[in-house]
Structures are given as C-alpha cells and as structure tokens.
Image (cartoon, rainbow, N blue to C red; front, side, top):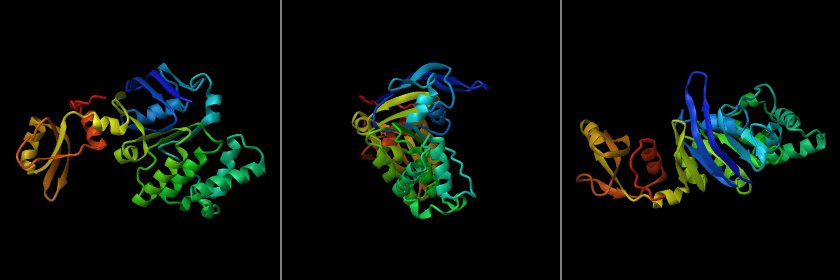
Length: 295
C-alpha cells in the first residue's frame, strides 16, 4: 500500500497558507516529516487523516480517496494527534474498551483480548486499573499509540509524539514505533531531528507549507558536496560570522558561541572539518542555504 499526496494546498480563513502544493509518495516503513513549529506538519497530518479537507489536490491511500471515502479511511487509520486528551477519572482499561467499541469491535471477548494485547505491548497492562489522570507524559503517549493500533491499521500517523518526554520515555517510545513500523505506513511528524535520524528510512523537510527536501537520511548526508566546519567564536564576533558565512546552526558553549558553517574550504583559522549530520541538512534547508546536495 502507498500513500500518495498530490499537489495538496490548504489556506485557512485568516488567509494563512498552511500548505502550498505539497506532493509526497510514502510506502511501508517509517517516514519522517521534519519541520519547525508552524511549518504545516499538523495541517498536513489532519488532512491526511480526513479531519479537514484540502482546498486543492488529492490524497489517496491505496485505492481510497481520503476526501470522498472517509469511512474506508477510518477503517485502516491509526492516529495519535499532537494534543491527545484523556478522561482523568476513567481507568486505563475502561477508556480503552470504550475506544475499541468506537472502532467497531463489538464482541466483548475480542475487546478484552485486544485490550490486554495492546496494553502489554505498550507496557501499560500493569496500570490497567489506574485512573488516567495519574499518568505521566510518557504513559499518556504510550496509551495514545496503543489506541492508534486498534484494528490493525495500515496507516499510522503520530504527530509530535516525543515532545516533552524525558530521555527514558523517549527511548521507550522509539523502540515501540520501530516495532510497529515495518509492515505498515507510519508517518512521524516532528520538529525533533533525532527522532527522524534514529527511526526513519525516508524523510521530508517541510517549511512555510512547502516541501523543501525529500530523500533517505544517509543519502542526503552523502549527497552533501560542501563541507561542514565547526568552531568557537566570541559573542562579539558572531554577528559578522552570521553575515559573512553560510551559518548552519549555533549554540552557547562555555561562554562562547559554537557555530557550524557550510563552506568548500576552511572558513577561518581554528575551525575544524566535521562529519555532517541530519541536523546540518535540516538547519541548512530551513535557513535556505545552498547545501550543494546531489540528491
């Protein structure tokens, strides 16, 4: 099964162009949609999920047209939105059973078997009688992915799933996603570069509603023909460096500014060549630098 997004556009009533002629082809496996907040990621995820219609273009999943056959889409879709609310006074098993009924699983014994299986898979079975209001952020996200797996979906969408998670919960969530992402389409929408580099075999970078780059993470790195340089500079020199060089990214480090630059040769004394990373590709693309990619 393949997801085909063809020339999709969306403008909201306040005249914000959230999507501008977006086209993607996504097959089975983990696909990362990477972009800053406000880039259009959540708009695209909601449109793929059939929660809102595009103004133009088409989206098909296999032979299902998302806009005209929403019921068929719901039968194969698992969705974890960016904001996933839970009823705080309801227990884990009570809400899960309710969601299974809503997904069309009417046989009680089948629901019980499914509930135990998915809550065990997400390491929540031992908390089945706890009220959801007591859950940590990571536990809520694991519940979210468990409910997204009800009905053996062929398309799974997770929107900013690791935002706010501590490193342990984030690693747990990564392991869970990698387990389920082999034989179905899983779209991971995030602004966290590591999530994509750790999990996804294919990716796209989106900004200002437009797809700016598509490819395999390793292929994009290997296709970079310019060199990445790193060095420490004084804060007073940072502005001129930002103006005079192709600045990929910067961060404060021991009272100075650590910068990463894109150049064909050593930009200045003291800078060392370093191996490029997906983060470099991401920031260079977002900042509209000439990355010299051969992809």
